[in-house]
Length: 261
Image (cartoon, rainbow, N blue to C red; front, side, top):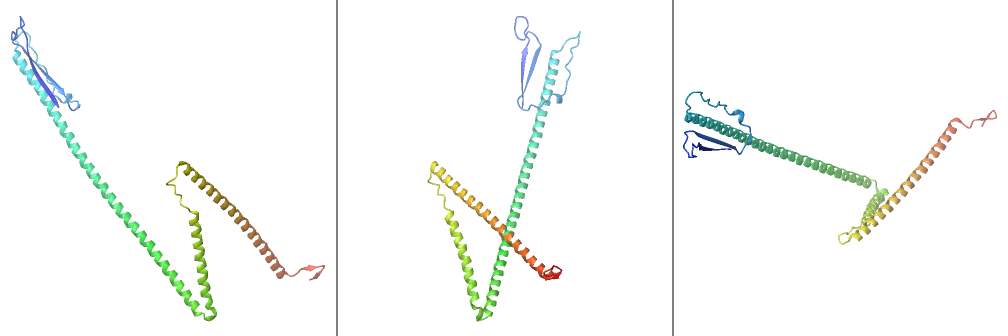
């Protein structure tokens, strides 16, 4: 924003009284209080009026021309300022419109993406449920066919079904024993009422328990490896003996001392 002020000064004549001379001087002060844009090049450059030599000087005309020049420069500065301000306001409005449009596009993209994700999760759940239903139906059909075959085998195999049910019950019992054992091992921590020392002690107990389990796991793994090696060695020895016996049977006992035995 531009602010200007006009100061009229009268030249004093002899004796210091105002109005002694007819010359007046107008001072125009301009203040640029807003935009820091350089406006100088846009102002029309007007030449200062020349004072003719040897002729009578009309100071009123010079003063009028100087006032016109200053006012023209001031009007040019004001016009440039408001033009620049209008352009900045238009750019600001355009920027706000682009931001709103981009925000709307991003919201639409997120909505579409969320909808696709929901559809995908629904399809996965439906596919999982369908497979589980098919497997359950297949097991039920197999169980019904097995019972039907066993029931048709007669009284001679009447106890086979009972044995099969008993074995299934044993497997179920073993599974329950395993669950019970795991439940006993997985004791609740109950650390809500423990102080710092209690927490340290509980952490130490857990570390010792984990160390013991890892040691037992390592011992069992090594034992299983050793047993597996012994079983493979015995199988290899048995296969070698069988192959040798078959070789002897296919080729006879052989010739000893020039005679066949």
